[in-house]
Length: 380
Image: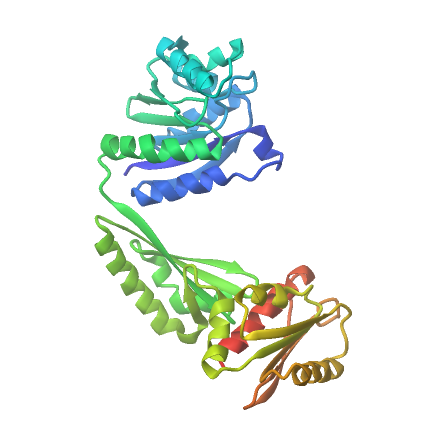
């Protein structure tokens, strides 16, 4: 089975100075063409370490996609590293140097002598002309081992990936399958309880099912490989239906659906306006609901937590003051011994108070509490 690994090159990534968005993009593109990615690795600007990784990775996979290290400076080591890995010399490509000079002329600039380094590639490499930048990429295809080296600038990398690399991989590897994913969002239930209900599905070979826990929310990722989008969608839908039958109302949405949008839907249907009052949350509920506008008509944040009874009275008074049909209050006492979370709901039909003990890190308590509050709203 053909598999790939992703290599991002740059000491600045290891130092945490920039976020590695390139690896995520490459992983998505590989998924779209049905090429399995089993590892993502970052190596600093050291040719020996990069070469060692390449040799090691090729004991596991057939394809390596790398980004970064293709500039003209001394600390751009990718060309040298790949040559070391394949035990070949760097070779001067005159046509590539002409392309680089033409690109500079188009930008009204003159290349310096160190730019000429970018025209040296490992012997036998296939140049990838870069029409949107000055750093060309290249491909080495030797003994059924393929490494594709792309610039680290995201805009340039994405263009070359879309227009040259994906077509090359499809043809070279005879790729006909696709990989699709679907993510089901749950709320109000822990990861262990979900696992106990769908553990057998998590061993399915295709589609595969995996869990990702967040504070107050657990996502269920379904991934399928198929020979057509129609077949993939059918397999995804069957697995989704089985999971929904087992988990029921714990699931609130799919893929890009947010709990905020889902939670406000019952209020819109009932034509109820909402007023919120929160304390100990850093105003997180207000921040997350505000972009959706109505039915949220008023919100207040109390910077200093009060006692539960006093807070409930403040929530009710505020609701009446702004003439909202629905009031929702969140009080988080995360630094108290029991780390209590209090939720107070007022509607024309009911008045309810929920006390929920929180046992996680105090800094995660606001997010956890807001998720539970939104879960209450969606079930109105």
